[in-house]
Amino acid sequence: MELRQLEYLVTVADEANFTRAAEKLLVSQPGISAQIRRLERELGQELLNRSGRSVRPTAVGEAVLPYARAALAAVDGARAAVSELTGLLRGSVSIGTVTSHNVDLPGMLAAFHASHPLVEIALSEAETGQLIAKLLAGQLDAAIISIGAATPAGLATHVISEQPIVAAVSHAHGLAARDVVALADLRDQPLISLPRGTGLRARVDEAAVATGIRLHIAFEASAPEVLADLAAHQLGVAFLPGQFAEFRADRLKVLRIDQPRLSGRLVFAWRPVGPASPAGRALVSHIRGQLGASNTEG
Image (tube, rainbow, N blue to C red; front, side):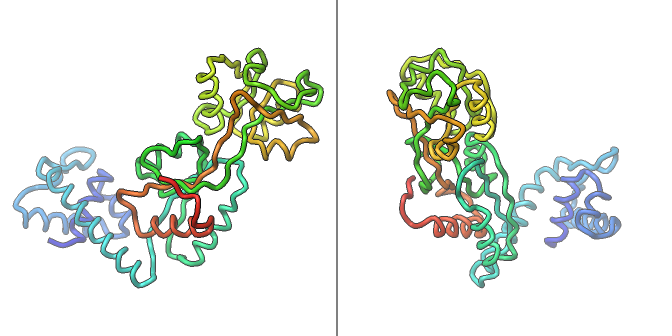
């Protein structure tokens, strides 16, 4: 039994087609067929059902596949461990991020790539809720997310920044004469917010529930820039990160929210336990080093 035979078996089973498997593996179709036949003769059982339009594992093949996959994964793990110890780190990493923050993530990833040029990097943007789910499912190695005071279960975090959530209105708005508002003052106002699943919206919804206030979200947009534009055009009161809103004071009047005060934390998050590739661990270590050693929770 050879590793390439197991690789051929797994690929044909995944592709359900010898031709597609051959194209994926960059080998000839007859070569794949011959090697799988040799494996079947060695085991004394057919592993693939070739009678239909697509190739499917037999009952014996289904029983063998998990062991074949485990063997291939073990070989990959051994290679990765050797590469890590010899400084030739290989593999791939996946990192996610929320939008509209001041972290120089591209610069950090560029520095990581310079140190580990053989590691492929995948970067994606999504809302905090989606990023947390992907982190916990192992689909991401790390992410920059927006959370409240509590660290999500199953994750460790490094606090990047903490800032208030404020209300912002046009300078022509009736509330523009004020500097501070209570959340209750906004109950009858058309409100503008990021959608559910984002850290900012979660903080607003939590405060509304805690104080028994029903808020009217008239407009939702996925980017703070759009929220600011809607508020500047007198379409309502926008909930915005404090620093972001202050930079737009020429177009918006920023109102501090009191009773209750709202704030959010931007954090770098990762899974502290569970399976993690050498490349994933290296990425987390690199970014934590770039951010500084303090402010780690979980």
